[in-house]
Amino acid sequence: MKRYRYTGPLSGATAGGREVLLHPGSVVELDPAADYTATLLALGYLAEEPGQAPAPHDNQIEGGA
Image (cartoon, rainbow, N blue to C red; front, top):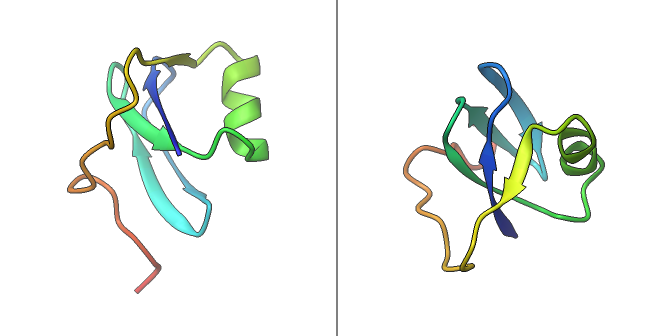
């Protein structure tokens, strides 16, 4: 996983088997090898965050239950 700053529109997605809420200006942790991450990078919605300390998971829902 890698940390990115998201600058796109308010959105949500299932990425890597977990739900991720995407808020403009927020830092999110995504799999750099995932197609969805590549799409967001190509759209210019993601910028790599300096330093790769683990991101907190309290704003991300794991699993799908």
